[in-house]
Structures are given as structure tokens and as C-alpha cells.
Image (cartoon, rainbow, N blue to C red; front, side, top):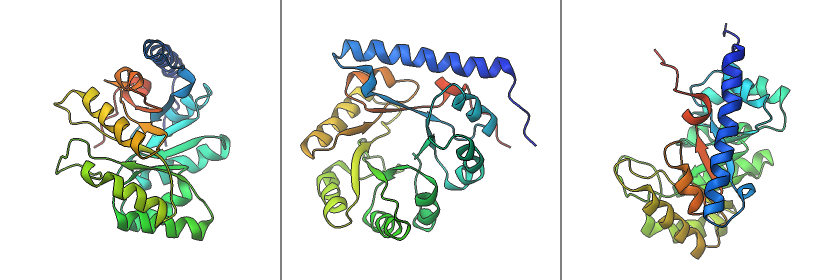
Length: 233
């Protein structure tokens, strides 16, 4: 049985969300854009349902989960109480989890290969749930990381649209840890612009202000919202 979140933690999450919005507003102002064009995806992976509920009770409605199984255990009761909550899948998706992912999530941000795109398209037809999809671009060309290689991105975006009929509403990236994130954010924006893709999911707790200045429409923050992740044994 989970321990109810104490009032101090609940207030801290609310304060964190407010502070983030203030920083987003300042970054947007520096870039000459409006802060309302930036959506905060609160990354709730590993955090308890009580922590997420505290965030939901502040009025925040957009969340990100990495694992289908974890989300399937955590979110149905929360969705029952907060049906307007939107859950983004921001972690790798295996084809054998596509049916559950399409049923549970509201946005899939990690489409990165033809086999997966085809499976998602087929399952969306079966369930009559035509979800917005983001294509993950491996801007750093890291062998250990998921994502379409930049040289293949234009063709893959076209394939997802034309062959599979996916609603490609955005691109997402995770820059290499040891490189300047601004270079990768600008690169992702360039790919999006030439392909007529409006959404840019980029920027995490350490670099989201830079991402906002470079056009992010979605930022993915976990630690900045919920604090350090709990230790999982």
C-alpha cells in the first residue's frame, strides 16, 4: 500500500510547477515568443501515483511515462479521477507493447523505425484511436540510443505520413550528455522546418530554457517537477 503524500511534498510540487512556468516565460520572452506555445510534460516515470496525483491536483494535465507496464499500473485510477489528463509515451516502444500503448497513451513520442510505425498504424485502426505521433531523431548518432539517424529522417517522416498514415505532429530528441544541447535543438528544429513538422519535444530539467529559446513546443521535466527519483530496489 502506498503512503499518502504529505502536505509538504504536495506544496513543493505545486511550487516547482509555478517556478518552471516562470522560467519558461522568461526564456520565451528572450526568444520573442509566447510562453503559451510551450507545453510542460511532467515526467512521472518511477514516481508514485500519490506524487502524480499531487501534481494533477494543482491543475497540471500533461505527463510523460517511459514504460508501458508501469503506466498501465499507475494511470487507470488517475485517469478515472482526472479524465482530461494527457499521457505521453517518451520511452522506447517494443512492437509487442503497441496494443497496450495505443490503448493507454494519448501521444506517442518515440516512433523510430518502419516496423514500429506500421504496427502503431495498424493498432490505431483497430482501436479507432488516431493519436498524435512524434518521431524520435538520434541527433547525436549514438549507437546505444534509439531514434532515426538524421540522414534518414526526411524519408522516414514521409514514409510515416504517406505509407502508414500517421499523424506526425512533432519530432523529439535527447542530446548526448557530453555535447552542447543547443546544437542538437537547433538541428532538430531544422529537420522539422524542412518537413513541415510543427512540434518539437526537446529540453529536460537541465536545459529546458535553452530548448524554449530554440523553439521547443514540448519540454520534458521530471526532477524539476517531482524532485529526485526514488531509489528502486
